[in-house]
Length: 161
Image (tube, rainbow, N blue to C red; front, side, top):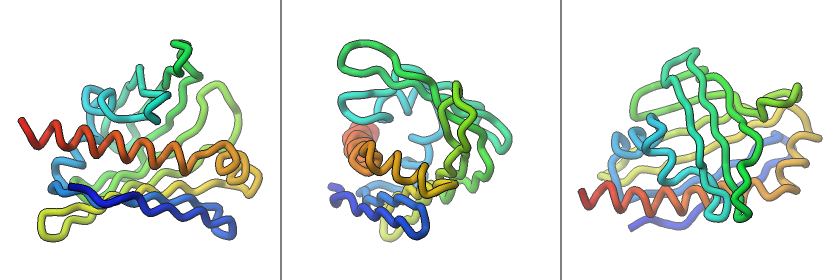
């Protein structure tokens, strides 16, 4: 069983945070973030799932996503470079559309386990207020919450194996 998402949009810090508690160990949740095969099962909002994931999971390695909408058309790819990895505790990477010269946001994913339950906190930091506003107005928090819901469903599948 998981608890519902906690969402915080902080304009002063140009940050969006989504956290959720999963009834699963940190190593399982961390593993779900380490391979394309896992990501394809849960990444992306329900109506815009990931249909392409490429990754070289190491500091300095790359990550690339493409989501496909309800019309079946793949959206523009986005991703970046892994900046920090602490097994079962933390992943940090930069992220942005690959066909753009815009600055990239920084995504930090924290895995905090206590008594067999793990809080996964996804913190997205934006380089400017304009970038923050664009993403908040575009519904980033709702999308991130939908992704957390899909991860919850996938965790149940992994736990049942």
